[in-house]
Image 1: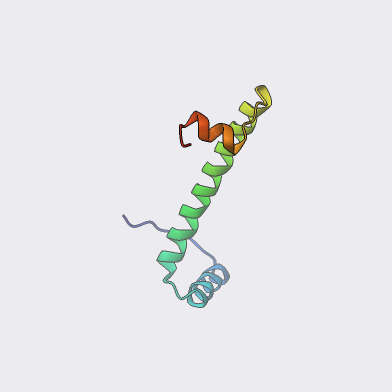
Image 2: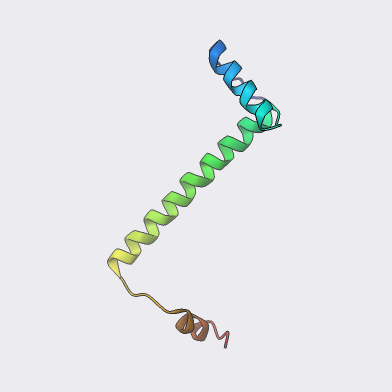
Length: 73
């Protein structure tokens, strides 16, 4: 799939120079950056949900307790 992106001349130059610095194509730089951003936001959302669950039930387990629960001993 091809995606078009409108940039100012300054933005275009900056992105090209950064891609060169990272030894990547502009396409790969943009693809990688966007996918990392999506992953970061997904991780943050998962963290926030986990923290909300913890706030509602602040029970914690030691490594030993988890090993026993998972029958890893």
